[in-house]
Length: 332
Image (cartoon, rainbow, N blue to C red; front, side):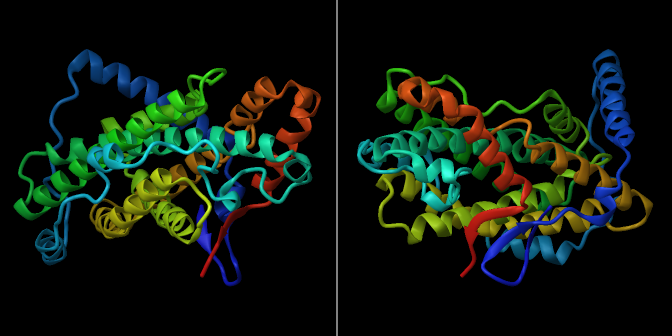
């Protein structure tokens, strides 16, 4: 789980309970997912019914009164200047290799290529997270029967914002691929099957498996800090900066929605403990060092074959940073 600690960095602290989780819990959840999804296909998924689920209507009514259009839309990307290949696309402090000996040993050209490859991966990561862990369950909730009008309005606005975000990130990714050709990997962000299984679970059954509400709260807190880091950086490409700053402005509002969703769908009791444990299992698999670190490094080695022999050491350095539990985002 991502938690802010005193000091200058954001620390990913393993929950004590999560650290002692039996691996069988994850296996049982994923196995159950397969059974549930097969049954849902055979019988029809059916509508989401909200009867018996309590909510604080005054909080949702207040959020409805504060609704406003998304800051990040495809129009912002289309109006941005052409991508600048001479400038980094990501603030250096966000790079998985930042602060390592491997990163320090790279030439300026190699460092820039790695930075821009990771920029595309960062776009792909936000596309995946917002499409499958936010938009899918929120859109399904918004279709529920007997939904309070204020809740319905907020959920529809939330889903609309996320649709704009996904489209905007996808448009910027297309521009980045065209600017980076040749020798561009088609996809740098490829979550393992277990991670995708949890996302499918949240999308199909957002109430019964409401672990996703705190997962997206961590995600959107992180997105705000990413945007703040972009805003402070004067070296990055203007289009990337504009996109991530606008995204952070939307996510600051969405963080309030996440808290409302958690209070609504996870009001306490034994099931909340279950959701917490499933969220911890998801986070441990999502932040595993076994995936997600090698794509930009391997693309760098393809463009600069002189470092091909250092690929494994570079991946090991990035894994060590991730295992340390430190995010490279300084707090203000």
